[in-house]
Image 1 (tube, rainbow, N blue to C red):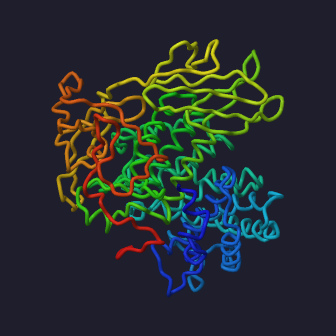
Image 2: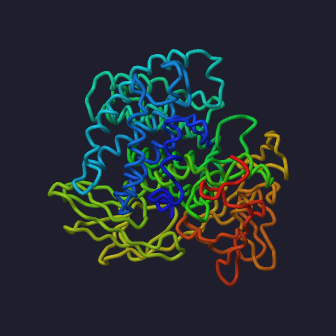
Image 3: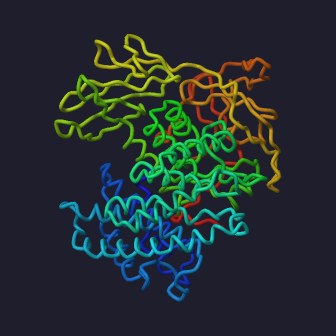
Length: 556
């Protein structure tokens, strides 16, 4: 659903996409001063979607390229044509960073012999090199700016760290020592999570710092520093459904953000692979099956999820469809899950496949004997599920053992579940209670002044990785995360209280409801039947007119 939004002109026109490059005075749109943000994310998403079999609208892509190339400024950057070059424009540095990522992905797409736009390849690669050079030269200037405490207190003070992931990739691709130095200096300057900062920006910086540690690891402690920061973010800013707030500000922001949730999933996966730590993959799974669907609209767009029960606040301040950023970044997270679901392990017995994330996926993996095609089929996280892995050439395989499920006739060894004598694993999701809890934030009804009530820790009931019940003080209409999570029996009975021993005492039947993004097709936001016994409660404030570029509303 998400890919269909940006692989045709139905929603995204060339004018809408490139407005952040040309800044036409008669076509102003949301976030167009972030020069290259939407256009760069669009290019990346189109290129990645093509790898998954979603063909681009080639005419639309050609039109975007034809506008983009002449919009590049004399110093290689993109932004307002009449603006002074250099300086400290957050919109330019943030947007240009995402545009560099998009151009690198576009260049690879254009090099495909089957691509009908191959004639643009040389010009796109030249523009990419000029933009990378511009960002490399800007790094010392931004690092000096960041040394002033006054500047660090702004919510978006970390915007310039968006350069870190693409410059790391550029440095690895080109071997340019100046790009390596720029990436390393940015990585060294990433602060601990103790400011009022935008979490999308901060988690992007952590992902970049981990990338530098893995590719140019001059500092052996850097990866551990990223993990330490991840743990602090989890303790302070992760909600019960696995997602993060929009920022670290106190009083807190009244919403989550799809981009930050996507970053949390990707960072957790990257750290899980680096440290071989199952707890990190578990965190990614919880966010993947709960927080990410919470910020996806029925039409596939991603956006924000308000934490306050005020319809005006939801529609005016925190739009549920952030088509200029979250739609693309949510897709980026899904691609990241697919790309990292399976990895190759080597031991004395030879090559074997390990499934770190049990999701349906078809992929190719380099082995010692060449390239293997791999397909994982599963209906996980159903309460009872099957999982099978087929590869050509055939390789032995296993699945990461998880606290979320148990398997029947299977072998468990050193954190892996093997199918034994069968060709598949038959598993059952476990019911478990998170009694330690993660911080639960709740706002009273219509409290829109950002003075949040901190309500300590809640207790969550899960079946597999899917949250079923969130029990927190004052659980109800004022806590939208809880309201969109709680399962209500037909007679209206709900959870009554949580005992001091951490066990949830339930009245009424609480049963599983599975709602991954692929099933969010309901367009009315009315209660959706899960089965004959249980319905999922949807908060009334979400009954709003869907807001997309193709269906403008009265607000930005």
